[in-house]
Image (tube, rainbow, N blue to C red):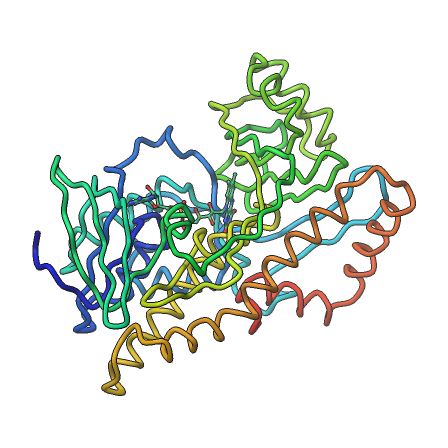
Length: 390
Ligand SMILES: Cc1cc2nc3c(=O)[nH]c(=O)nc-3n(C[C@H](O)[C@H](O)[C@H](O)COP(=O)(O)OP(=O)(O)OC[C@H]3O[C@@H](n4cnc5c(N)ncnc54)[C@H](O)[C@@H]3O)c2cc1C
C-alpha cells in the first residue's frame, strides 16, 4: 500500500470517481482511488454516453478529451412523439453554444480516463474491492480486498462513487427507488439514410427511443417493457432491424446493420441525503436516472467537479477537509442541480410514456409550442447542457 492515511479515498473508479481523482491531481491533496474491476473489455459496457458541451469542457480541463479514441459531435437534436404531430428541433444556436455535445462510448471514456490517471501522480488501485466502511468524527476507514489480502486505509473524507451499493452500510443514508418497469436495449445500428450529427429522441408508449450519432452509424438506446426485452434481444439481426424500423418510423429509411445487443434495467434511485459523517456521495451513488435526455453521467460529472472545488477551496482556506460544515456546503451546492435533473428526466418518462390519446396530443402540442418559443428553448437547452445554473 502506498501510504495508510489520505486526505480522500474515492471508492469506485467508474467515470465519475475517476473524474474526481483527476480533478484533485496536482492540488497537494492526497487521494487514493479504489476500483473493483481491472480494465474492462469493450463488450462489458457498450452503452453510449451523450456528453453535453458542459461535460466536454470539464473533460478538456481534466486533460482527458485528447485521449478519447472516438467522439461524434451532436449538431442537432430532433425530439418527436410517436402517435402525435408535435416535434422540436434543438441546434447549438438555440443554446448559444458551439456544439450541443458529443457521443462517446462508456468503454472508450473509461480507457481515456484510466490512461490519464495511470500517467498522473494519483494513487490508483484496480482490482480493489471495498467491503466495509467505518467512520468517526475525525476520519473514515475503508476495508478492502486487494491481491488476495485484506487491506485497511483511513482518510479525512470517503467519497462513494460505486454506483450506490456501499451506502447501504451508512445508517443515515437512504434511497428512494422507483422501478420504471422498462429496459434499455443498446446496440450500434446502421441506417439506409446517412446522416452525421443528428440525435433523435422519440417518445413512444413503451418509453423513449434514442438514436445518437456514432460516426456514420447510430448508437441506439431503445426502451422496451420487461416482457419483451428477452424476445427483442434474441431476435436475429434481420428481424431486430425490421422491428426497430416499425417502432422508430421511416425518418432514416430502413435499418441495414446492427452490432451486438445488450440490455440494462431502468430504475430511478436517489439518496435522500448525499452526505454523512466523513462521507460524500457522487455520480450514480447519489442519483441513478433514466437515460432519457442523457443526463446521468453529465450530472455525476458536475457532482465530482463541485466536490473537488469544495475540497480545494476548503484546503486553500486552511480548514479541514471532510467536516460536517464542508459536507453541508457540498450538499447545498448540489441540491438544485440534482433535483432538477431527476425531476426533468422522471417527468419526461412519465408524461410521454402513456396510451392516453388526449395526453399524447397535449405532449405533442407542448413540443410544437417549445419549437416556436426560442427563449424557452434556450432556457431548457442550456439547463440540459450546463445543469440547473444554465
Ligand atoms: C443504457 C444507458 C445509457 C446511458 N446514456 C447516458 C447518456 O447518454 N448520457 C449520460 O450522461 N448518462 C447516460 N447514462 C448514465 C451513465 O451511464 C451513468 O450516469 C454513469 O455511468 C455513472 O457513472 P459512475 O461512475 O457514477 O457509476 P458507474 O459507471 O456505475 O461506476 C461505478 C464504479 O464503481 C465500481 N465499484 C462498485 N462497487 C465497488 C466496490 N465495492 N469497490 C470498488 N469499486 C466498486 C464499479 O466497478 C464501477 O467501475 C446511461 C445509462 C444507461 C444504463
